[in-house]
Amino acid sequence: MNAEGTSDLEQIERKAYQTIWDDGLIDIFVGLALFLIGVFWVSQGSAYSTFVAPVLVPFWVVARKRFSEPRTGVVHFSRERLAKENKKLRLLFLFGVFTFMIGVFWFFFGSHGESLSTPRDLNIVAGLPAALLAVPAIIVALAYGLGRFLAYAVMLLVSALPVIYLDLHPGWAFIPGGLLGIGVGSTLLFRFVRKHPLGG
Amino acid sequence: MKVKAICIPLELGTLDRLIHDPTRLMLMSYLFVVDSADFVFLKNQTNLTAGNISSHMTKLEDAGYVKVTKSFVGKRPQTMFRLTAKGRKAFENYRKSLNSALSCLPE
Image 1 (tube, chains in turn red, cyan):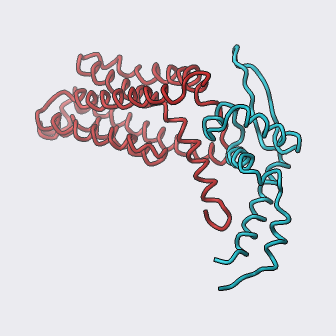
Image 2 (cartoon, rainbow over the protein chains, first blue to last red):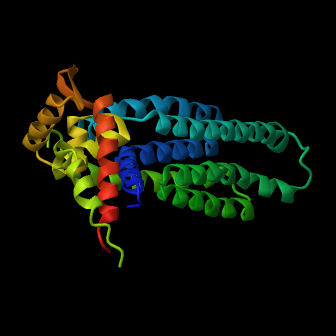
Image 3 (cartoon, each protein chain N blue to C red):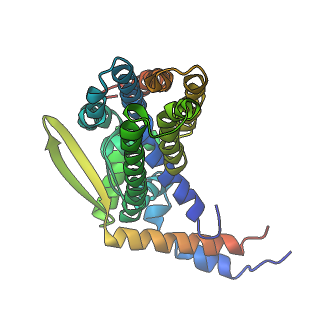
């Protein structure tokens, strides 16, 4: 503790905030989103993949409300914390828009058109979507103190390599990261349920 | 070794005894860093028993430090706790007094 006792209070606040993400639901939903986007994309149903995130987000909100909150309890954080979180969300949103724009650009000029020059360049472009998604995963890991998102980012980057070098479909790079998220999230969820039994 | 013997009894004398209890200090600390929290959340965070939290919260509520709001979420009862302005001020004063008192102790 420092002279004003602030560091311990900050730790208490951080610990309280971290418990929101201990249920593993965010990992499962992010993993599921990556997995489904990958599968839809590989199976030429890329139109469906655009609906994955908007469909899954409300499910996550409801799952948290119905499943996690009765176990962990309800907490409302301070205005300062909410302002900080809103800033992080804005950053993630802006990056999401940026990623989407690159995706649109790639879709129109990379996959269908022939305007992105050599086949060798196209191979690199094939690994780009997964590599781009690794960046928000790193931002989430740093901004929310969720170290496991760094593992998902690494998995996305590693998965992009065979896609680039073996000239595979870009969608394949999403699937291992998705499965990792589902696996880690399920483990966390199992622990969470054991630690916080309903009405316990 | 520098000892400021005079300031110790003075600062310790100003400590709020209602907050000084370890359990209440823990509960007040959690409520100080958040806007509001419910019974289940505090129970999970502090590992205190339900009865323990109830009895200490009643004392804090009686002192006007904590505001208790009871409601139902669906069929589930929910008890929310929030530090009042008086409680927040009292906690800040307690921290200052304790820190001053501790700084007077010989190392």
